[in-house]
Image 1 (cartoon, rainbow, N blue to C red):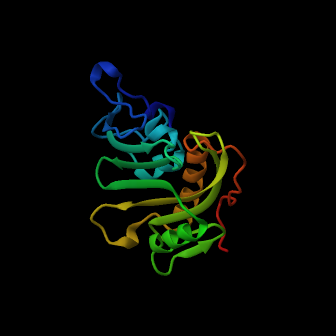
Image 2 (image 1 turned 135 degrees about the vertical axis):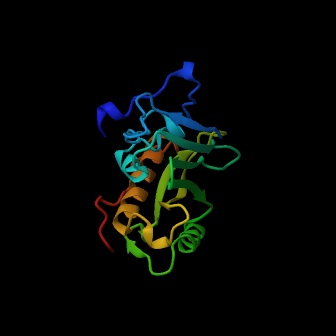
Image 3 (image 1 turned 60 degrees about the vertical axis):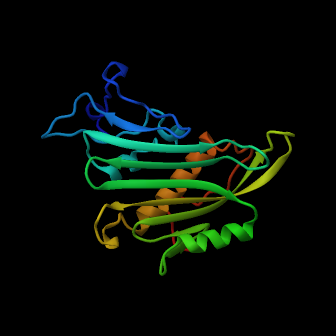
Length: 208
């Protein structure tokens, strides 16, 4: 990211900085210009910090405004936390990200199989095609009611591409595989409350 392309308008301009919890709004940049829109930078707490990675900015491209939506459900009644995010640059570039726990490893495997398109490339812990990335990971979490530690079987799914274009216009298998790992890791570290280490695939992601 270029440092001169990431300044944001302040509260006096009515810009909403999103911290999660079901919020949505438009972000504007102070130095936006019709002939030189700044590079996207989602490093101000959007979607509880899960999107603060330069790869997201590169995917969304340059934009004068960026729309971000987030839906965060904290741990409750025996359910681990869940996070859903959506980001759209001005124009056609968009990305969605979701990380949610299944009740068992088997249920998660079924959900992963449904999320991956036919012919997707497999890697250790997940898979990807040109516009979808999926990652399975186990996360130790504490139940809010009892403090008891248990395993949450998480599935991270990220989708990206150009709106209203054929599927082949997505970022590509390697990019989507890497995004699934990067976003899954950031969600685990900043949102999900994992109490122990997680076994992440190395990036760049290699085929299994």
